[in-house]
Length: 122
Image (cartoon, rainbow, N blue to C red; front, side, top):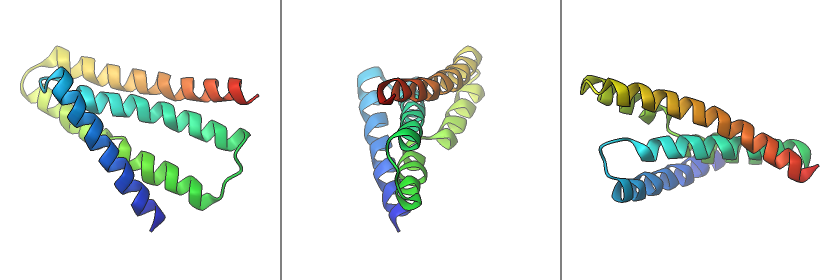
């Protein structure tokens, strides 16, 4: 039940971020999906690091936050569809730039979250 609630919170948050991003930056490029993937990866790294160093939490709380909230927030299935849409529109530079940017920035963000929290908590 708690994972489902977390998923609902994450999905609603994702909708709000992608909606606001679309209004601010336009709908020609999937900026919102890329932003939630990068931000979600950063939060995942920071959260996992914090739970490992300072916050001894239950497995249920860990699952609520990681599987539920962040699982509902990050959107790699939407990422895949966005890539396919750009690709099928023959926007190859945008499609591959989006894929490389999303993956590269998300990986950098998860490590940044790990390093940041370890530095602060140590």
